[in-house]
Length: 141
Image 1: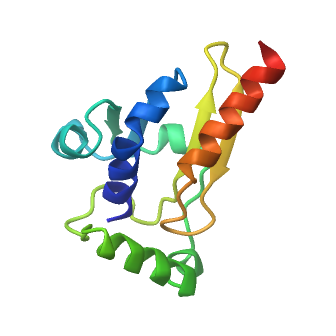
Image 2: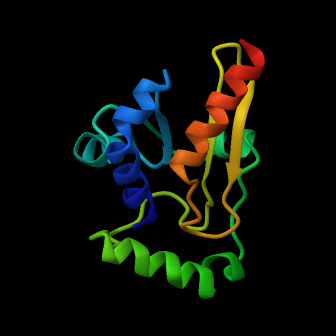
């Protein structure tokens, strides 16, 4: 449910993301067919990759959540937000305990922005991500 919600948010902000000169790559856990099922309809401009193991998640320090990271008042609020947006949980793929994150990585491989989810459904604020990217560019270009 939270992955679909995030893809939909990326799709809604695609024009702003492209205007900032960014390209979206979404990495999920599962089989390639899972990425092919959801990305085209929710975030058609995103490059979606689905791996059977959380290799990228581990490399970027994203952790597997404990029960308290998955079931708490904050995740209940996030779940309600996702459901109000029309997103429902279906058959999960991969490890449902895996927490997500958002990273902006420059062409030189420098992490410009990093947001590591503290709890399930803890998505980055896309306007804040874009503002951080613009600030990084202003300092470094």
